[in-house]
Amino acid sequence: MAKFELKLPKMGESVAEATITTWIKEVGETIEMDDAVLEIATDKVDSEVPSEVEGVLIEKLFEVDDVVKVGETIAIIETVGEGVVSSEPEESKEKVAESTPAAVETIETQIAAVTETTASAMNDYSGGTKFYSPLVKNIAAAEGVSITELERISGTGKDGRVTKNDILQFVEERTNGGTTRSSISSELKKEETVPVNVVPTQKIETPKAIPVASGEDEIIEMTRMGKLISHHMVASVQTSAHVQSFIEADVTNIWNWRKKVKGDFMKKEGENLTFTPIFMEAVAKAIRDFPMINISVAGDTIIKKKNINLGMAAALADGNLIVPVIKNADQLNLVGMTKAVNDLANRARNNALKPDDVQDGTYTVTNVGTFGSIMGTPIINQPQVAILALGAIRKVPAVIETPDGDFIGIRYKMFLSHSYDHRVVNGALGGQFVQRVKEYLEEFDVRREF
Image (tube, rainbow, N blue to C red):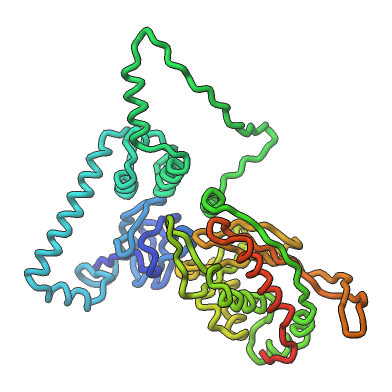
């Protein structure tokens, strides 16, 4: 019998680790090639890890809620054969064997330095009453979180374990609230030096309202994605100064053109032509005209993005939203945009998105009109600085101007709601941008091909 090491596969350039959410196979179960062994989650996407061999699962090296780094062995599968089979390619093994003594010494020195740093961090938190994973301890050490503070964190992991998200949320809340390690330490020292005959003045704080559930109420636990979205939205409101601009666009030409060509489009391209790719095309053009909408903020500096990567908010079956990204959207024609939109929407509904599919967005569009809303005030998708909400298309009476005079007619109209970060996007830029989107929509060429 041979033993195969199942490793956490690489899931994208920007993904370095994942959390185990479910073990699909248990120890002792037979596994076929390409069978899903476990489910993992990054910060936004859930994925399955398939087996590369046939055999029997004989050992699980991590438990549910553990954080695993890319390339780490997560399970051992026993196969027919002899020895230990690694999932690493032979090429990489040959490169290691060919390393020079000097290179090996350098690597050993680096490993020793990392090991010493990690060991130091582990020792600093060895006196706690709870178990903390190495990742949590490292984050705590890097962020200056004391063992006393760490002990106060309510863990959401198994058996109340403090997870990576718990420690990161604590650090974020502490930073936003202005509480630092030094201030806590100084307060503790002050309490220790208060004379016995002096009664310290107590600060009276207004207690937060705590919801109370009666016997007839249903208690529903938030999903993992629900918690992530909640934290992401609160952090965005606390980070950006949100302001909105609204404008109404006449999309009668687009409505009539799509109705005329959608049948031929399906026959020729094999894709359903919706309004979304048409709107995305107009947004990408407007961003090219106003590149300072396509930025992010890092402290007191602005990062102007080279690529135009449009995020499109998609509703999932459980009611949550996810934002897959159309990369280099300004370089796509309408056919390419339609295929990209349909592909990402379908894979989002089927929970088949890859981590890279939701990374590196520079501007987001959300279609609130899907649910019948005529407008909305969406929250910015950090670290972006703006987001556009598309309202429902309505058939309304409107004044139509002609060389022969004005008259009342029936037109198809929609509201565009533009939310932007007033720290870096002023009202002129925010308003001009959404006005340019309106112009592209209203000037749509009804004589164009696909």
